[in-house]
Image (cartoon, rainbow over all chains, first blue to last red; front, side, top):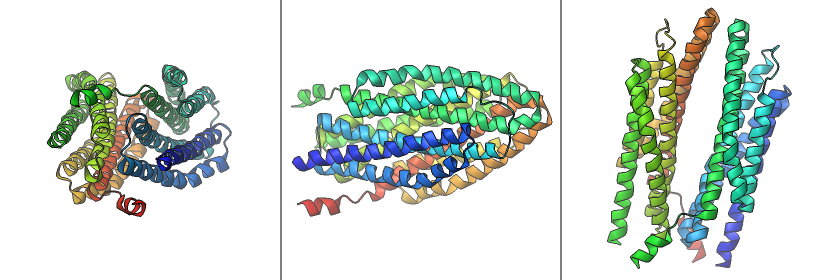
Length: 220
Length: 220
């Protein structure tokens, strides 16, 4: 049983390693867009493989824990939450790669247009990611709920950006390609925010739990 | 134990109900775009709530099965695969809603442009969804692998569509808004294809399994 407790700790450590990698990828991809930083984009591409590897490791590790120890209640919830958060983190890593690709494409299409609200959306999304992961580490339901509350703000910022970028395209056809890249950046940032809310929901599930006791007692 | 076997069957039945709903939503959303069918789009919006409800039911049901029966090996894999497939199906339902929203927006922006390759992409994506779900029901690894093989075809069709739609926008600024909707349709269809490949990968995991025996034996 001590073994199992250690293994649960190992699972959490692996998930934290994964989340640091994904957070760094998001930060670099945003830096690549905002600062036109080619090397930051390349760093994102280089780290993608490690993120994919660690996703598989975590999945296998968690499933082995379920198979070998058949945990109940809080431990079961922790492992299920780890599986779900792992999937979300891997998708967030993919989305950071998408952002970095658009950053690269923007380097080849000089835009006169300022970045509009992109730094603003990016800052909000990054704080959601941070809070969702901190909420998981601290098992803090209030922090998790604060992530859910930010989702609407990201949506409305993105909608405002969409209309602004469409007008920018309509003004001059030379703006179409860079504006499509910027639209893709905002869309991918919004999807990163969505995955943060998924993680926050998993934290709430982890902390409050699904009530399995009622069924268990009825059956005995 | 007979109870558990029945409950596993119930889990599969619920997942099949979910997958029929999601498949119908995808079909209707595509019909709404291609045939400019407003009522098909509205049907997609109406069914979204049921899809979200059944996702929660399946999740809770699966987690209860894990908690109450602590299954091993093949049964454990089935439940984990059901949890993952459930998440993918719910996202596919969301993407069908996105497609239906773009269909609605296209109704208000008459386009002279034909639908380019959209019917072609749509047919391919629908066959991937169908095959992935059939592979799950029949536990057929060859069928699952055929889904993975189609993913590149969808990607290259979508890339061709992208370039064609960008040229269409550059030709006349009045084309920008409808072309953005069509771009969004192809992007959402591609994401539906991605989720089908996730399901196909889950089927391969279910059929072949992660090798937990090695660890189990070492520990005894």
